[in-house]
Length: 499
Image (tube, rainbow, N blue to C red):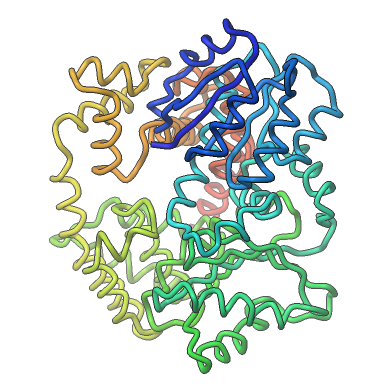
């Protein structure tokens, strides 16, 4: 579990925070709480801590000073600041000192939960980051890049933090690239990082984030319109790196023209990172919703005894073979592996299939891949214990707005910690992440299949408020609920006209 500390000079508020939300549902353990910030500082500096939640106004030491001192010694510790004062200078100072968010009292438990979900999501992906990069990479700039990529900041906060860090958001293009080291050697990725930096000056500006010791993510922008496309720029660099014993695979997201669309480019790039196990040096992702939806329809009906070959052939006649193949593989793998970092360890038979992928005869390779991964999917479905079936059924009933890990654990007569561990082992998700994703996907389904108003969909999906639903939906799908419904209807009408 992740360790958290809470400090507030008001004992009643401190006690309320300890019981305000289902901490275990976030895989968080409150290891220390106090009304004394000096004692908290001493504890944090001498014990493993992932998160500090602090009041801003305290007599002995204010929360801003506490944040500054914690970040100075332990820059990887997350800090959430709570305050009764809606003061811009406080907010500005908190961000400058490295706080992740600034929440106003009285605390809305859903806003607090939202902030915690964002932080835990980052901590889960940092878990594999080795001490080689710990001190040098866990900086405010790196954290900002991570938050930007993953759409964890409201637009106003993104602009404010970028301004504080001197990052120019007013450029014409952004392309996200995920670099993966194929040799499972952290030192090689470190060498490649230094190697790649030599090519950038005068051509491209960049921000980087080490997602793991073997995965580097960059946001790349050209310095002028005369520069080549990112893919064209990268190919000779990757070839040169390979000749120098640095086998690196690059997954390239679509180029976007606004900083608000950077998370979209990142998600597309990340969707193809599994191709590092193939012989390809790079792959260019695209954001073609039509291809993705068409592939999903085929996969929903696929079985080894009825593979729908005619439908698959029709798709290969309609869309570029390499792009279509990438989408087939991506969607198939995501159906049984929620974390691409775990693919090689948990599903070695799948990575062996990927190693046989040649950039030719795409149609037959897709048919073979679907057939040979069916056993993996069947095993996953059979592996769910009855207890986890109960949890999943309870979530997908969408009948209880207050459902929690603790509540379900009481029903099943087990501890929340045990249930959370088993749920993660068998699904690859932490409970609250799964709950949020299930509700959002259900909301998206209702947007497409009904004419319900947004407020009624919010109620059916068990969200606390429309504002919280809108913010969560945009973070997950990259667009607002209203835009999502409109874009899907337009796409459907165009398909009907072309039919």
